[in-house]
Image (cartoon, rainbow, N blue to C red; front, side, top):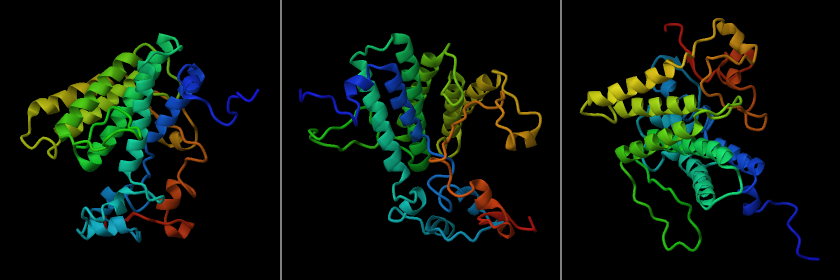
Length: 294
């Protein structure tokens, strides 16, 4: 009589053998795609604008000031890569990478879920793991490639740092796997698709070809980025004909390659971007505004 299943939790066996529960687990990993405003106003979000002398800002965030003044160091780098909760991109992305690794470990052992449904979910998670590693790479360069989850019984948690090229090879392989496994599926709005994986691959190749990561200017890297980008453009995505409509109607058009949805609990605080960038006379923050001279 006392051998009861807990009513406030779902067991691993139940999650990884039920298509609805497992898709929910995969959707949780979607949260590893950080919103564009993270890690927070005054930090990563406006870095590229504030780093030049054209705009003006009253932002007092330490990360911006340290960057503009040229005093960033390994000791204060968290000021610009951490969110208001104190967790950095490093902590958050590796947390979701661990969830992706657990997904593969569990599903590699077999599942009662049909192979077709499981293949679609595996394609999504390969994309997500590539995305999160790419986020780490463009922030830190080469990072440790971890493809398994740790447990408290492991003798060591130390993993050597991989080179940028090694990480690049890994994420491109993840994209190729995602492209293959997502092929042929009907995608609902907000879900990861084959074109989304193709677009991510093109972006990764472009970063790999850039002068920072390609100091010898290997033209083959540029050609690879060009070919991957053209493959996405050839899918016939177009810009919406009326730009202003995009701001007043939630239109589904062939302009969107991959759109991530946000709930009220996960959106940007306050009024969103408007509150950060409207002029202060409109009761907003006016964080970054061009000067009249510009």
